[in-house]
Length: 79
Image (cartoon, rainbow, N blue to C red; front, top):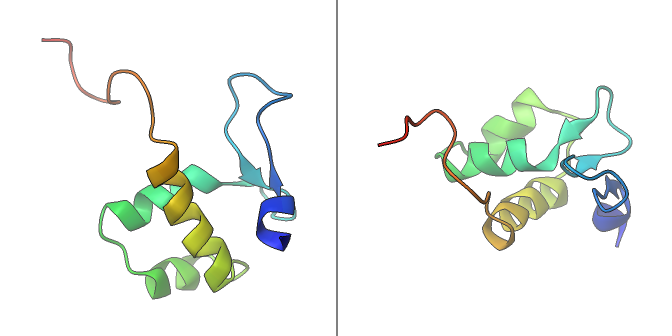
């Protein structure tokens, strides 16, 4: 599938997150997915990033659901 092929995996780059290859600058998949999970509309994301297709946006949403961040949430103090 084109969407999956266009994502540069992190397997060869430990500690790095998947990004779309053909984007300048490379755009993190998780960033788009998290925007959607925080309530942004797909149309709003496409307006901000016109190079993304509807399939790209849907892939990012599904990616963040399938692979949630692990560890302590960012920005929260240890309690």
